[in-house]
Length: 275
Image: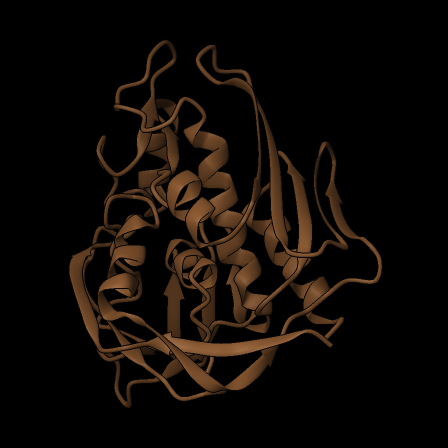
């Protein structure tokens, strides 16, 4: 069984902002944690400060974002934060929040990566196992699918096919390590479309979204300033890493076509069952 040393952050670090979907103000503090703690969300605004671990068994909703829930402790839109922690190999961290949704930051994972690097990354004494695959595992849903193949390392390939004239077919293949994540993935923001906004607002979603923390398209143009020509697929890879982090350290080649948080969660559960 492959193993590596566990890691935590070097000191507490905080950030204030609003949630992407709820629009609610939140103060989030990341705290160092002992070996074997894992990633744990603590709701300091609720009586008793209840906690929910970042584990696939606690996924309760995947509509537009990933929700984790254990008893009264509920957090949602956690995938960007989890993506940063996973890519930077932070295994143990307690995340205190006084609201159910982390701050959106700039709409990507870069805000959280900056927090981690400001706090410092500390190697711990105990090791953590790395899940490796003996055969491929896949989830299919119509034209959509996501699969994990045996691989020596972590690699993600995403293919998007979008009818928007400015998007079309996009594909990106990235071998994930600290440098490639920071350069190619961390700063990619979520994509939105003007014709979806009214329906999303009625569902209580997207209330904290702006033209700066999301890449927004009308029917004919991009209303934001993209950071990459293919920001859509880069953010999809960011999301996959956040959702798949619920399994823990992993060696695999993940390939997704027209993926979703729902498919990511189902693959996470399937991989978790292998441990």
